[in-house]
Length: 106
Image (cartoon, rainbow, N blue to C red; front, side, top):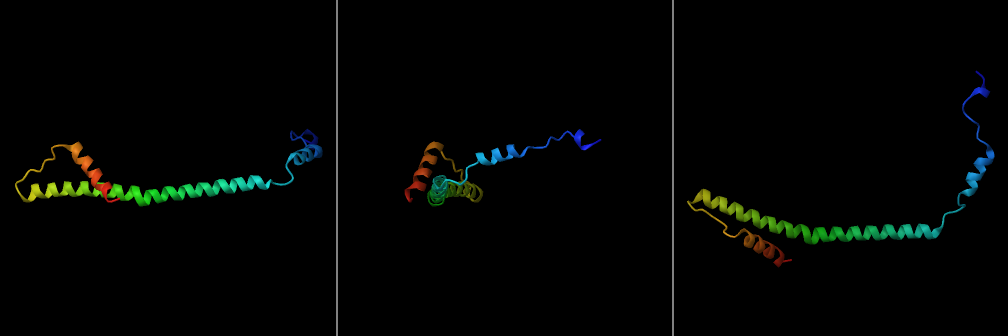
């Protein structure tokens, strides 16, 4: 088998030069500026979301679920220590008051 029988075709230098000539010679600075601006805006919006999460949502949820756990544990303690049955008659009102109390101090 000789090299002329090979299945690989040699590439012509002219095709290669055409590909290189079609590429832009330099990068546009306006494209880079818009990418940097978009990146800065994205990072700023992520920072704002992080602040909202850490300053508002997590404390409010913690306060709500903390109160809910406190009432639940108090009811369990009362039924264990004393012969008392603690019943919340209106669950919707209980949950609504918990939300209002948790949001009151924010």
